[in-house]
Every structure is written in structure tokens, then in C-alpha cells.
Image (cartoon, rainbow, N blue to C red; front, side, top):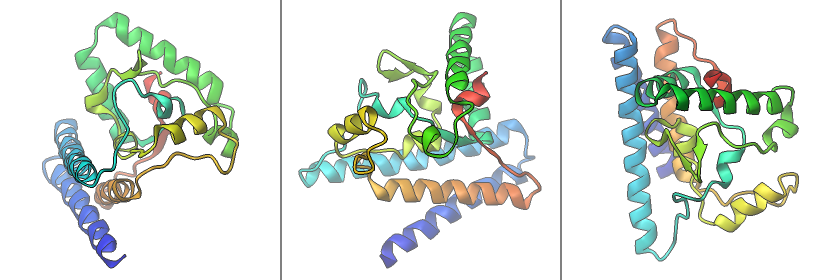
Length: 208
């Protein structure tokens, strides 16, 4: 447990330093997005290492293209992540695709906007960026998506089909989830120290 705590501290500090780097570089959009990209690269590297280790031990991480069960639940992200995501969409997609994304976002917002607590968390509606079982903005997906790794696709399917069952939940890997959250917390703390107070939104709220 102490070793995990040390990893959490290290990832928090890495996130904090990246946030400070963005602030010291002028706190403009370019500096902020560059720091966010570095943060994502670090987490993706951790996930790659975990995947290799899992295979070596005869275990599996079952997340792959075409497995979309987690992409139907509410996904929360900080505003700077969603600004990064929206910038990616604006730069890499044509007007028709952007209009489709906005329409899907409005549809999901209309369905989830009035929900709270368990009703919201258990609601199922496809992500506006989901297309034929894959994320069309995968490279810019938020931290919450990157650290949501399951060792059992069956558990994800069960949660999708029976979200109200308290005994049915995805078999998620705790380690990357905790470290990713800590890295984002460190990044957020650096911004707050410099007068920027990040807020949390669901993905669709920022894509409308």
C-alpha cells in the first residue's frame, strides 16, 4: 500500500509540474494544450506498460476497438480537457462531422440534463464521439476515458444492461485510475494556485 501511495504522490507531482510549466509559459491556450498532451502521453505510457505486464502474467486488459460499453455512460472531465478536445475536433473534422457531433451532444444532453445522483450515473446514452464502436477523437479523449480499463468485458456488458444492480459493476483496474486522477489533481492544483479554477462538466455539455 505504501508503494501505491508513493506512486500517487509522484503522479500528483508530475501533474503539478506540468501545470506550473503551462502557467510559466504564459498560461495561453498553446502552452496549456501542450502540457495536457504531455500529461496524456505519460498516462498512455503507464497503460502500455500495464498491458505488457498483464500479458506476461497471463492476464488481460479487454479494452479494444469495437468494445463500446463504457462509451454509453456519463463521462465527466475538467474544462481544460474539454477545451483541448474541442480544439482537436475543430482542427481535424469537417463541418459536416462537427455538426453531427453537436447534434449527438444535444441529444445526450436532453436525455441526461435533468438527471441527478444514481439516475444520472446509471443512465445510458452513446457518447457524441462514438461511431461504429470507436471514438473518432481517440487521440484527444479526456483522462477519465484513458484510465477506464477493464479486465472483463463481460462485467462491462452486465453493467450496461443492468446498471441499477448494485452487484453489477465493471472489473476496472484500480492502479491506473488512481494515478490518472492524482496526475489530473496535481495539474488542477497548479492552475488554481495561479488563479484559474477548473470546473467539471460532462463531455456533451461542452460539445453543444
